[in-house]
Length: 193
Image (tube, rainbow, N blue to C red; front, side, top):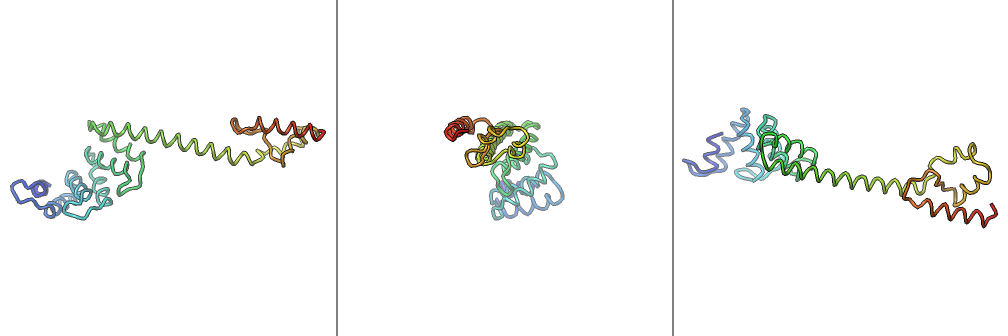
């Protein structure tokens, strides 16, 4: 790993990224976490190799799994941005938290950012699913027809079944059922029910 660093930085030898990658790869294959991290960095930046985020993710993961905090941070960043891995704020937060627990100060900031992004996503998903439910259920019957014969008298059934059979008895709040029910009552009264 140290020889790779010397060639990457030009310390005591002419700077040569390709030779640095060779030395990093040799040490990385032997399981040296720092070399795995440095090789991941070369792949991420495209130094001495073609830029390849998949390669960066592979080597950062190897180093991060050995507990190297800076590799955990960099892997979290790949997940945050979706570079070489599927974008995931959850995975990013997992790796940022590990790095933060080792004292990586910027990981703590990024962890907060991930939590904020996850919260925003949760709010958006909740809004979308609620809107979808309201849109779908506005046109549904909510299962009322099955119980109409058992619970309501004939006059009540006619009021419920007005408006082309769409039922609002169990409709969720905020879908406009009060207005629709009022229209149904007016319609029922005008039809002599």
